[in-house]
Image (cartoon, rainbow, N blue to C red):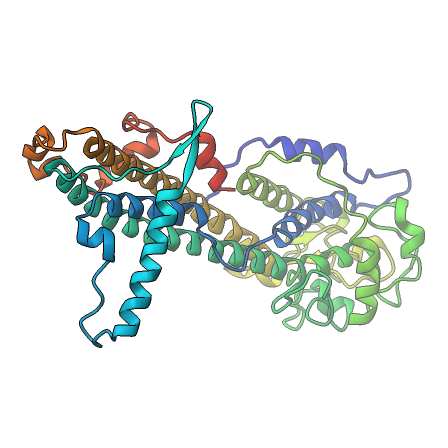
Length: 441
């Protein structure tokens, strides 16, 4: 997959916060910083608060308002008794009385509602007098109400899709950090770490050593500690926390996790973010790719060892023994065998997060358009109601002779695209942008 990169202020800030190589440090500091940058982005995504379900309060309020305007312009029978009950089953006398009483209470509450106007409390709703204008207004508002209900249904679908994409991105981030099946950021155990350093960190391309790359936590530990028979004080990731890692080994899942508990707090804070995590993730992945195989060491001619991160290319690969030339991650099982970087498990998950976020951006754009349409429908309903309210109670309104084509119709695909691109001007009612954006948070 081709990824087009932009310069990101977040990564520039990150460079200023990296662990710096000090005198006597060995060569894994840059690799440690690169994996940390990806890890912290995944961590941020995994910790985002995602609601269990959508509320839809504002959207429901718009539909309820249109419904009130429909009732206010309805004929007397509907205004007094409400919608007809279903034919089947037949309504009992008691049920009818209960229904009518509930309806009357709803109407009374609506008619008693007041708002502040010119410093005075006035009634919010006034029932227009009977006239052809009111009949026409009711027909218009009825059609608007149908469209509004449909729009809210579509809004709900988009919001549910947004929640799904956010959950999927969160789960991918957790899996990238700690491996498949880990559902909690603190649950880094056997699903994250494995039995020996050679198995966990790639060794010398043996088929049994494919665990390298299964999680960011695993690979960070591979870069910073040795296996049990190695030298414990090599501090490959930097001397600043060498003392804490002294006598820490990666020879089984328990010891691997102990080393991780120290290392996870050592990742440098990335500083301010640019607000575009897609580009930040893509840039961090590019920085990682640039370091794989970047230090051939004294044995750079050995074929099959160009997929090593940290350490040096050598015949032993990454077995964590003796010196920092062998403290590294060998991604050869994934990269060299024609699969590319996308075959590295955590890398693939971060790449999928980028795709999820692109889908999420599209859904949020759709949501903005639909909420704009709903606000416009509500304004059209208010306009129809006002036309009836101020028309003569006896003379037919000129609106009554207008053709049905003047009634609101569903926005076309071209209209929707124009609204997104800002080509088409706003309708007679343009809801405040701050309100719409507020709904997207």
